[in-house]
Amino acid sequence: MILTAKSPVGAQIMHALTARLGDHNAVVISQVSLAKIIGRSERAVRTAISILKADNWIEVRQLGNAATVNAYVINDRVAWTVKRDGIRYSLFSAAVVVSEEEQPDRESLGRQAALRRIPDLLQSEAQMPAGQGLPPISQPALPMMEPDLPATRRTYDLETGELLD
Image (cartoon, rainbow, N blue to C red; front, side):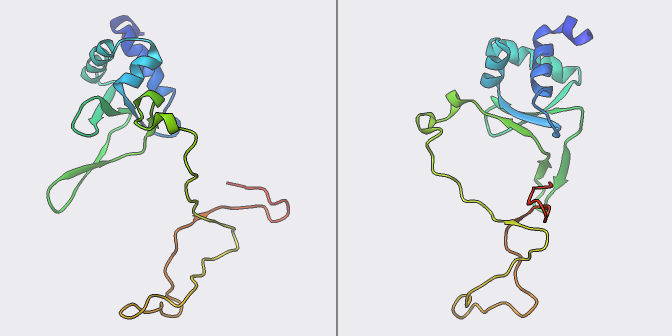
């Protein structure tokens, strides 16, 4: 209620961001897309975001050199880690919102080749590498030390074949 009175555009932004959170605590979106979603100007969005930041409604993490695409963290703190080289990195999960208009390949959207899929494993299955391995200096894996191949694990009902996850 206080936010709506202080910054109606800020309240709109909070509604737009929280509607896209799902199980995440952050949303990555450009200010252009955010302005289109709420039907306001980019300037109004920038002003409202500064109010939301100042009043601790959101935390903003900039992506890249330009401040036009950000991660907006809501109701949580971003975890920072320190690497050996002294550079701090942030890790969080986020819903990422992109608009068609901002894509350089927008004319081909929907007509791209399908991405490769990582195979699913059933509950009773295990990964089995096959083949001779690479020529020397590489060697085949040692028995019982086969590499873990990329895959997703899914659980299916063995009677009905229905996905349980």
